[in-house]
Length: 331
Ligand code: TYM
Image 1: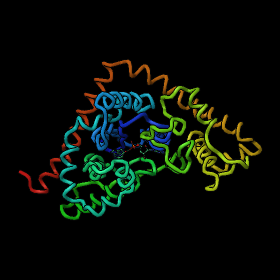
Image 2: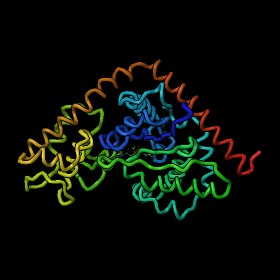
Image 3: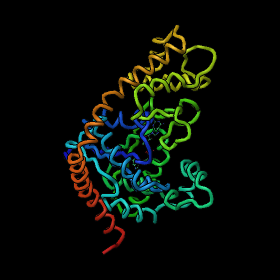
Image 4: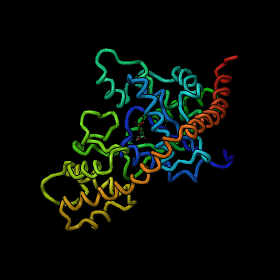
């Protein structure tokens, strides 16, 4: 770790196949901020078990996500990349912070409301407490900045509230984290239902979601079949959610403004527009997929990354945890 850089922390759940939304809302920015910060990237498997996972699938998704982090360009030498359950400080700090968070604030989390509705009668307590675990993740590393998509805004606000509350009681224990949410790409919507976020746990409708590991031809086809409207005008407007979503995808990849994109596509029909979008998406994903397969097949290398990452993360996390334990009065 370099002493003079601030810490960036973020994570992703290995709870399904990562999507274009995960890439544009998170990976892409993690990558571009790598030089500026000391970066810590977590594979949040403790988060994943807040809804029931098949153990063999969890193992598969965890390894794939690690390979994808590396294939997307995260540097394991310069940064800390690790699996959350390998560092027991997360569970320990989460318990302590549970005692400093309130039922009321957790009940207000919209993600809890959404996810708990799908659980029937028996809602796991972990699903309710999940944002506290997320706060522990962030606060353990004295994090200054957390790059995430729009759906994590409320969780980040809560992490800040908990940190401020704890510091008010015990002094400056935690750095107060800032969130980093990109201007475009922070909320990629489904291709078939562009009023709802594209999600890796949306297994019901294959055509709604672009998975990063989808065959490239399948990706192009999904974009061609995406829902638009009937007026054939390429305008960035809330009244045209399908077109707006495709423009967001295009702009997040090309770094163009939405005004510039509207100009680029002036006079295009929807068919040609979709083709242009699918070309930039496919060319963005192609090199990641090529590297992914090589990395995933190198078991010894991945084992090393896992071991090395756990050691580095454990060391940093325990410095904060020791301080917290002392502050609350543990011997
Ligand atoms: P997760 O696994 O749901 O998503 C990982 C990241 O992808 C972003 N994202 C999106 N961005 C744009 N459009 C979308 N459709 C889209 N879907 C997902 C998310 O905002 C996120 O940045 N609890 C977190 C993981 C986590 C974490 C943390 C994040 C655990 N500990 C600490 C930050 C800091 C989660 O479930 O992300």
